[in-house]
Image (tube, rainbow, N blue to C red; front, side, top):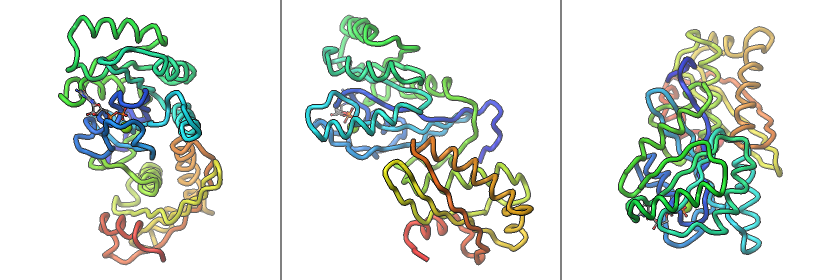
Length: 301
Ligand code: GDP
Ligand code: MG
């Protein structure tokens, strides 16, 4: 894992746009596999989906934000609330516009909220394969009227056109930061997995070489109460000596780890977070990362 923050960039990008513009398809194309549900039926993706994309010098946490569109009913309003929170704290907001559909009031509604976000505003024209150059130019002109975008890119997620380019442009506008997650973690990551990885990364960052990479973290529980998450996690080490290092003098190290992890988790969940960290000496067989992960999800101790 790369814990050197020099020249490495990491952060959050939210995909927004009216239903069917291709958010889930673009997320999947970025991840190179099928995770989000793609569907010609609007609003199939109710649950927010995240994917992690790692390149040589950046790590993107991509959030598929299905609920941000002009509400038609009560459910739409609920979805919007969550989606609006989602775009408030991200680093880049990518607003998707379908090249093959006339730009309309739905897009304008989304754009208004994009404009209100402090993030970098990236315009993404999707489904480039469906239109010719002339239509494309008209779409670009119409889209640019909607919001003062910082940059623009044209993609076709189904053809794989400019998907790399999209990742590249987003990466350029992420803040300098560490690689939070292992490079192979591309899936629709659960909140528990994200919590465990954020804590693990903070441990490695703060303890340097003193604690081996075999240290494991299990997120035992996340309890939600409105906009507050109460989180319980256990750090697993091999030996008593390592436990001492992680706890530190008078608990100073565990406090440092906990505080910085908590700050990142608050950004991730856009909620206040209470983090309860425990350290446990675990038997040798538990060192296996997959085993630890599996236990974290399946076992209740
Ligand atoms: P979302 O509602 O914004 O998540 O949209 P989806 O990703 O579910 O896509 C809606 C529809 O558009 C699906 O039928 C996709 O296959 C199709 N679609 C998405 N991206 C492209 C593209 O680049 N080219 C073409 N031709 N179709 C696309
Ligand atoms: Mg979708």
